[in-house]
Image 1: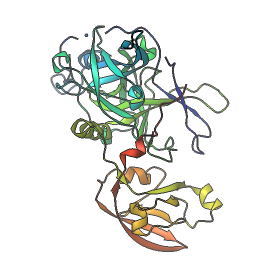
Image 2: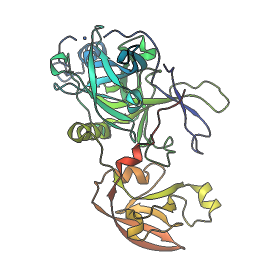
Image 3: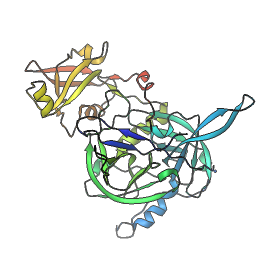
Image 4: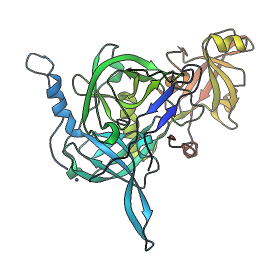
Length: 377
């Protein structure tokens, strides 16, 4: 059994902040279903429904997710499943697909979901995405009590009201908290040098979430899912408590990844094949660069797309197809708008000279995800 887990997000952007990976707590599990539909409607004249009415509509589609381990029984057979993690999820279709976080499901031998009325059913893992911290489970279609739809996360604006529903500490199912969108396109948590837990383009908000909320939906005022709650920052480097710093994976990415997982059980991520640093004024000064934004190439993977295209260590990639790489829009974010096999044009500074490098994107090998590990407590 594991307890609430915490992630340390290293790197200069956070200066050692500890990121709370809103995953797990250890409390009793009871496991079967009920029925309704969940699509919030506007009142006559176009006025938005009261929040309580919207919550009542969508809440039945939000579930508590149980990650279970199966131990060997006394006579050599399988023993009773034991709970090793708890998170939150939400049902997206009448076929019974449930979206949650990868870090909620990783390492499980079996799964179950509990509905807001306390009944529960078994679930199976359809596929997962360690890169974006997403996973899809499936329950029996006849068990589906309600579904929710995705909204357009690209249409969000800072200050827009949002609310979250989840199971904090695994005890308080379908807890509702509200807040606002605090910021968009947050890449400061993206310190990963591999394909595990690449936190990029996140939605920042202040609707309170806690361990157990991981994988739960962040809704707009219309009751559409516009994000998946994934982590928060509880303290500064000295341990001083912080408030209202919570982050969600944007729904447009979630919807795309969920459909990939449902269709194939895995994700197809475009692959450049480099290791790099985000360039900022400090990096530019340290390496005597002529620009203070972009990506400094520090490693070129042998046999990968970058090597085949002729990228070299020390190159600074400043734009992709004319889109500048900035602090707000990272190389990784831009590349995600393409598919494996697409050709892109890279603007590169090499030895002080501006060059153009044409590169055909590859696909991240599935083996790259095998070393992704569950967060440690």
